[in-house]
Length: 408
Image (cartoon, rainbow, N blue to C red; front, side, top):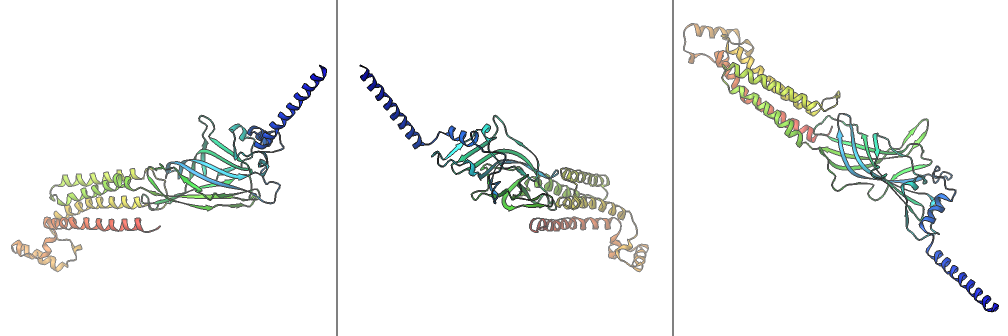
């Protein structure tokens, strides 16, 4: 009986050993679990997230950068900045986090709490004015750890960046607004930034701007050397934004053209309709002044002349000149002697007086006598009816040709 019990015990022990060996071989075949790998790499290891991956090496860590633009919310000329919502994506290799020999899993997805245990570059935006992380309902961050130690890190940001604008052609201008990405604390001995090869800057398919059209974007390098601290790697992307002029045509150009044309109505009124012509002239001048102030209210006080300044000033000049024209013909209509400024000699003036004194009929007077009095005033009005529109059309041709086609 004891021999049988011993035999059964031996067989049971052998079965347990064979089962354990089979489980061990299967585990070895499939690799470690994801949790075991994370524990091995980040918790039960000597990994230090405060040290960059190649800190002890003779080369810097290359950080690939990609920006996915979700939206460009606003472009402010007065404060010279623009706001946008982006995914900032970074990719680098940390050899200390390789797990090629421990699992066949292509990548591991890390929780936001575990991300704190992984080294990340101290990336910042050099031209940032203000920014914010998105944390509703959880921090909007993503991190993937690949078998060869490659780390893919993405975060969602809302940032306001400075954009130095040149407004000489406003509102027919094209602006170049940059985004500068650099390391704040690591010099080029430790970190070098570079754009990824595939779509370094990508845009949301439904991206729309209220007053601009995104024409293109240009990539570049903005590495800068500081005398005290050294050289810091930096990459830049320039967004080329063309202002949509439709809003300004409707709100500025068309109303101002109509006001100028309205001021020309006084040329067709009788010279004796003094109240009507004065009211029309003063009204157009005041309206033009008010519109000019409103068009410039949202602009910074720059020292150079803008296209909108040229337009509004010229329109104001035309309506003011219409008012001055009435003042001139009013004085001219009340004169009984011709103006010497018309270029006539005193001999001709004496001839005209002699003709008037001898009782010669008005039809026999010389052309000199037609340049003063009501007849002369009406003649000036007839000249203004065609001269003012012709001058305004010539101004428009020059204005649009220069500010649309000439680079400044």
